[in-house]
Length: 115
Image (cartoon, rainbow, N blue to C red; front, side, top):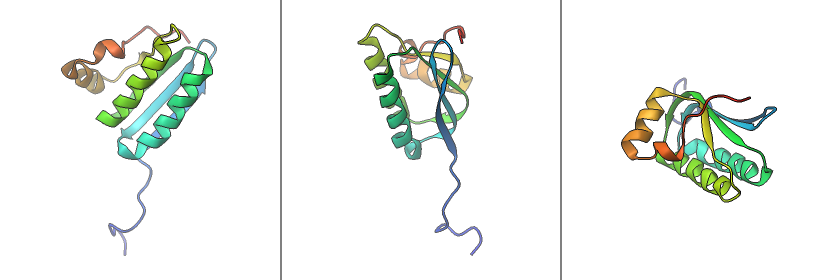
């Protein structure tokens, strides 16, 4: 049956790491919801263990859930324990507004791109 609720759905998110000269870039696109939590957590763990600066590009993200933000905040904490800071270099105004309303904007600061 076309359009049946039982048919598999297309992946509506993208989580990937791009290695840049000055940092690892965590790219988030689409709907970063509960389906994206496991891949995001796996990538965040790799980034936390990697020893390089980490930046986020979420300009193509349509939405980010509390669970995804929790993973990013944990990544930020892991980086801060080794003297680094997670930064956002390609922002999304809707997500930035969410962070400000939730009081989390200081934990995921917007920084000028240095790639």
